[in-house]
Image 1: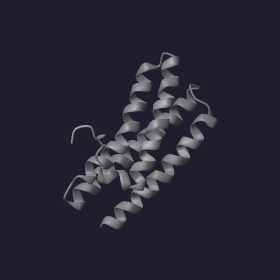
Image 2: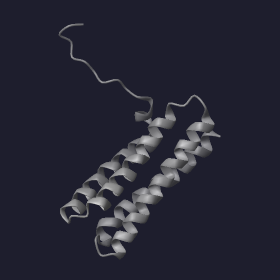
Image 3: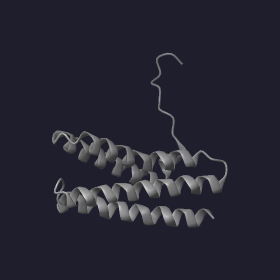
Length: 125
């Protein structure tokens, strides 16, 4: 109808707690990537940003599958991306690029999300 405000569609994955947590982590990784870019560490920033977005994207993409088995495969890819993010944070910390106060909260949130994804998968089977 003309003149009515258009609303964005509501996607099924938006209701999933694991997607919400993944999206929040993606935002945090994006902010951290911006800090890396300030230090001219563009490739590191790009990799962190990509892996961070991969988590929520794979949850969303998998939720569109009509088959549980396929959804679980996408959730496993999301978990692997979380591990990639965790590895980067730990390596960047070893390199002195990031400090423990910057990485610890993100690592804790990634661990919590990883466990929630695992439990979610178990509930789907």
